Length: 259
Ligand code: PGA
Image (cartoon, rainbow, N blue to C red; front, side):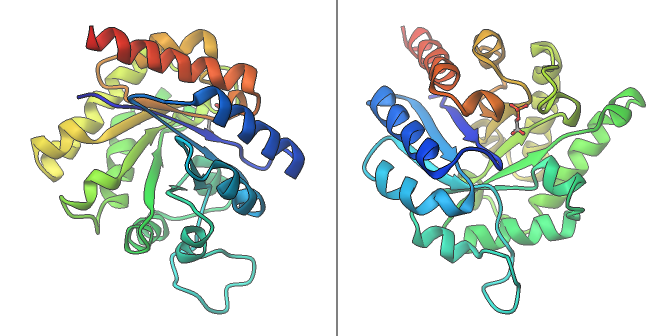
């Protein structure tokens, strides 16, 4: 059965009080999430209180990043086992802001994916082309290279723990969403690549989220596409009024599919 997975990436936003209040609102509103998976990814410093607050609820928590080493002299960094310690189930890896603002390389991202799995975390691996790459018809090549490289050390069994988030860089935080047809086209390409790299069973089951200006008014259209299995939501995940309707859209789609 198809799963829809809605995750909120809070980035470097909200205070501790605001984070906890939003966590409470989500916990109360999501109640029984049914067949929709929900997670929030607050900044590192709020993972611990959010983990405690959401413990036992259907809202999971994830981190926005991690370091690929087990531990040691890496000032300012956080390891996968530390994330696990505070209740993280997921970790976002290779977000475009990490790639483009912080210069993370594909090898570094692949090392994080391997370490996250070893530490018992479920990676949400982000991929996506820039506007210049799309305009020069390089989308497929770039996205496929990013997926293949990030999954280099992952075997068939571990693929059940991986989520891929297709996030065109030009759609992130810009209010410019990919048309559902554009998202669907790239998602289908990613699924076919996963089939080539692993097998068709792995490809059928891998969750491929779309990210980039997902809002309540475009969520249903995006999430209804055959190969769109969820959303990684930035700006609209910072308020209950905009995040909860996206979760509800996913729930309605699941319910309609089951009728
Ligand atoms: P956005 O961010 O929804 O604000 O565009 C998405 C993301 O960066 O994950």
